[in-house]
Image (cartoon, rainbow, N blue to C red; front, side):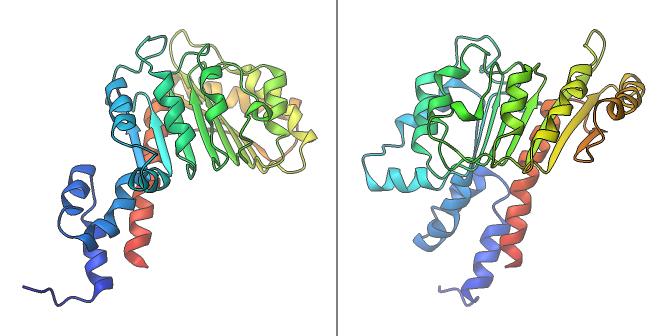
Length: 281
């Protein structure tokens, strides 16, 4: 039986049905039209929690054939590491990180816009920084991600947004980020809890924003135990005017409690917003 719905309505129905990856995988097997509609949704956002997922992706996507290249070109967002509620084996300091495969994925996904790297050991970042694609606009890393200099990225991505979570950055790193000509938003996240160090250095380093004419916002975001965080937030906000009066610098409290959950909600929320925009088009 042939369907009688207009193609644009049928496409909206298929798009609304794409609430999770298993559903999308099922839908692309319905017919060629459904495959053409939903394959970009399947590949737009990919999460790797385990080393086996990384190696399997590389093994099943051969860039030497046109289908493999086409699929890799659809990837816009990639998340490596823990996602908060779900943990894999890509842990900080773990030998499970398949750096060769991670490097290969980053090298081949030439339309990648957003990259989140969680729990990569600070001594391993240099193994993959050379593969960061020129298309990248949004980079998120933590905790303790190691030395980071945008000018050292050999493929010269024009990064617009950089988030550093749970990491002490040296003054020269902060200056390099702030003065990057394409960067518009620099965000630093610190989780507050028992035994955690008060991030006074983040406020003290904010003075360098006066050197930038292009940065639009430097944000210090606190999260964690509110009973401990709220007094600390007030203390940091009181300290900020002594360092700089630049209105581009803000300090605020974020939700939910952990920094990884906060980042994951943003990552998934953007995907839901994208689906909603497709359905309204």
